[in-house]
Every structure is written in C-alpha cells, then in structure tokens.
Image 1 (cartoon, rainbow, N blue to C red):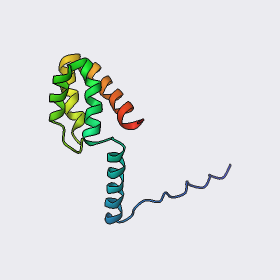
Image 2 (tube, rainbow, N blue to C red):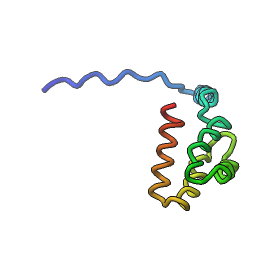
Image 3 (spheres, one colour):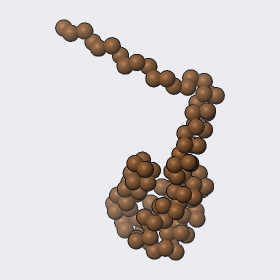
Length: 104
C-alpha cells in the first residue's frame, strides 16, 4: 500500500470578516478597472446584443442593469429567451460571460 500524498498546501485566504471584505473590495476594484462591471461592461454587452435585439432594444434592456452589473444575467436572459427561445438565450448568455467577463 502506497502512502497518501501530502495534502495540498493551505491557500492563503482571509480568515477574518475584515480580511474577507478587504479581498472582496480588491476584487471589485480589479474587475471595475478591467471593464468587467459597470458602464464599460454594459457597452460591450450592448454590442453583443445588437444583432439579436437591435441597438435601441439592447440599450433599453441594459438600462435595467445595475451599475454594479449584479443583475446583468438575470436581466438579459429572459429578454433574449423571448426572442430566441430559452436554449439559444442560455447559449448566448454563456458566450457573453465567457468572452466578456471570464476571458477578457
């Protein structure tokens, strides 16, 4: 019987509520400066929605999205589903997340 490998080294994570909140603020600041939230993200999402909704409708849908972009996906997916169907809307939202938020 082979010995079990050593467990993975512990990651350095904030252990106090203050440390967690500090890490969250740091992440939000980095996301904001990278255009992953707020007006920059809204403009980039509008470009992605225009072929499906048109310029005016894409802008109107994004008017309901908060400045923090916290409700972005829950706002755009139902509208897209009304035009494209649930499956196509889900695929488009996944592509938007992958290209504009995760990989950018």
